[in-house]
Image (cartoon, rainbow, N blue to C red; front, side, top):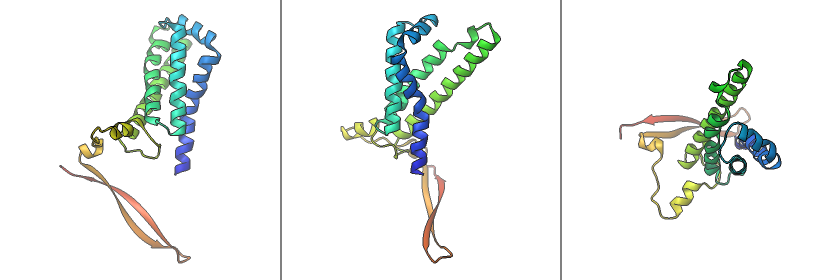
Length: 182
């Protein structure tokens, strides 16, 4: 399953890394488009947003502060959806449809980024390496209780030992969720 996590991280982050690089290499074209869309401080906004998504994507791929990377990406995508893809302002049916698709894509990816941030920052997804929240714990802040613990949900694994037809023992885990009123 570790390889699937790595593949997923790369596939998720690749669009942001490529787009972040394009914010720098094609800055004139992107600045012109941002000005057309009436983005304030268009040139600076293109550089800042490019840096946000480039760092966010790299952090997620490397598993280094991936929670911060996911938050940077979400912080880019939500305003971008409204500023750059305001489909409700379009009068042409094709332009309206294209902007609505881009708007929905941005909000969906922002939602995925926020889920990723929440899972990593809460400690419920630990295979991503060091993250910002764990560094704050090391600075002396008390550890936070996970969302599942606050809700009284405990994850347990029921393990069984099986003997295969070749005589080798293997262990299989069947996860179960236990709810309590604690």
